[in-house]
Length: 156
Length: 156
DNA sequence: CACAATAAGTTTCATTATGAAACTTATCTA
DNA sequence: TAGATAAGTTTCATAATGAAACTTATTGTG
Image 1 (cartoon, rainbow over the protein chains, first blue to last red):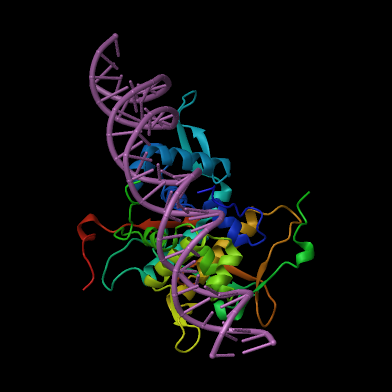
Image 2 (cartoon, rainbow over the protein chains, first blue to last red):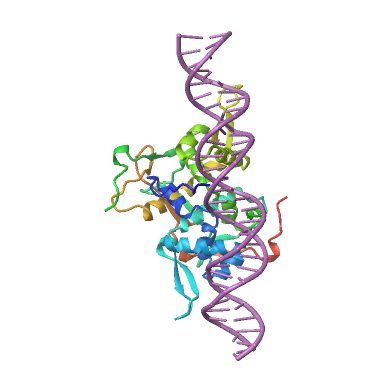
């Protein structure tokens, strides 16, 4: 396969995001993490993922700062995998995927899990809006590209 | 590999969504489609994807109703690939990924493309909220699972 | 119209990524 | 302390991917 092309240097934030979490399993692991799972075995049982692949994914997600590995017991070797702040910031991504799935991938009357506010029980939804609060859809939006001349500018 | 496990029967909408568009390349193709691309060659050049893989992905995305293939010229064999309504509904997913990428994958001062409202030039953002309009974060939300007894209930 | 140049795929082949199962330690439990 | 779990790692077979060559269909040019 000649190694999958990396998009980390792409100037499109979506591309970099997909480069970080767009591979098979990663977002499912993150979903389970949002659902409270922390242990290797929990992820493995929930997803039915091969153990070697899960091991590799947990390592990568940790290296990328999306999960952090903390010793399950003081002095012990076993880890618990917890979402970092960076990982928790994927919440809108999860909600967006969920919302699209609900809209388009379930038959009428077919049951699915739902995301609700803990306290009120109200359904959680997601809105795309301008920074002054007006809802907007794809047609109203446009991508402002980085001029060629500025692309190479790197941080510090 | 014994075929990648399918999640289409999972009762979690996020899992089904990832099953549909969570493979390598699919969302990048969708991103380019949002950016106005329609032709095989445009996607190929933009992404640097192998032609056989692009061919397969376009076929799959079309089969799943996310893209539709329309003849480029009347009577011609060449296709244009356009987002369907279902495909355009992935807009919030793209915005969510973009927003996370902007927040966490760019160094300070490093340039990136931005999503703005066409008319006003205002930045587009994304908010997770309850259905009565209050913003909410991951801590305030909880997943309501489908009871075991109801899982099997299928549509029509 | 004839001929070259593109566009859009498809086929073939080499290589990587994944899955399953067996194997290895470390940790927990009775 | 012995057996049972948990958490990985190793090994091996197979699927997915990438690159390049190849095939048609379409477009452009004189």
